[in-house]
Length: 306
Ligand SMILES: Nc1ncnc2c1ncn2[C@@H]1O[C@H](COP(=O)(O)OP(=O)(O)OP(=O)(O)O)[C@@H](O)[C@H]1O
Image 1 (tube, rainbow, N blue to C red):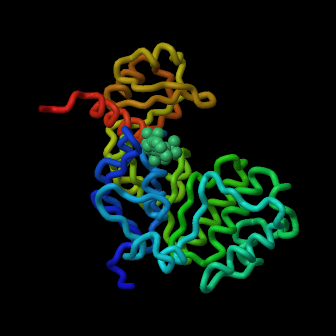
Image 2 (tube, rainbow, N blue to C red):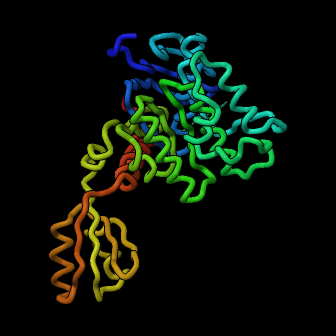
């Protein structure tokens, strides 16, 4: 397949469930080597977009392609690995048996041991799947998703239920797969996960894509800055200032987000001449995401122009 054909593409896609417009004209492309994080509040349409790309759903209008083909085409499906939120796996099979079975559906799979090692489940191969903890089952599902040596991996909230160490290990494994040339579509509600992994972020709300770009570009679209400092001023005082969008304490420091960093700095310094440990940072993905989705909510609640 030529390099300029996207691995996955939605063009002008609409999808409705009864009265609910789940997707209202979505255009999305994924190219080789990318890790695309699909973000958005509950009900934004992320799972619907993925269900269409996996061939589990059909679009009402628009086109959906996987490797330039219909997603229901077997040749296209053999190029993907999938880790969905609700995996129903035969409970009596061991992890090793599940891996052998799943790998047998693919033309050039990874070895069982290699897949298990990549996902950090090599010590679980002889254990029945049903007897594993929730976090261990998620890692096994990840091993199953990667065992077919996919060119494109769909990970739907992969680290839900994992402790911090397991999450970090999974992030490491995802990075290794991407470095090896695998493209990834990731949905997550953990913005730090998107921040840590994504080369591109797509924010959805109300069945539309409301923003798309690199994590840095998305941050830059948001006027908010973070200001941190150690101060004798108390939280309630600064939280009430007009320049402050949000305030909290972080350890012994005050943390504030603001659309008017310079004005806030002048006011802080004037109010506390002992103020120290001052830092000003661009807003993170979390602030950008909140601001973007609030703007989309406000637009969606406006009556349509005649
Ligand atoms: N099978 C279905 N029948 C009816 N409505 C549905 C169905 N699946 C999804 N919806 C609705 O379509 C909209 C989009 O849902 P979707 O699951 O794609 O959102 P999402 O962004 O994945 O949400 P979440 O973050 O909660 O997983 C929602 O309003 C949802 O209630």
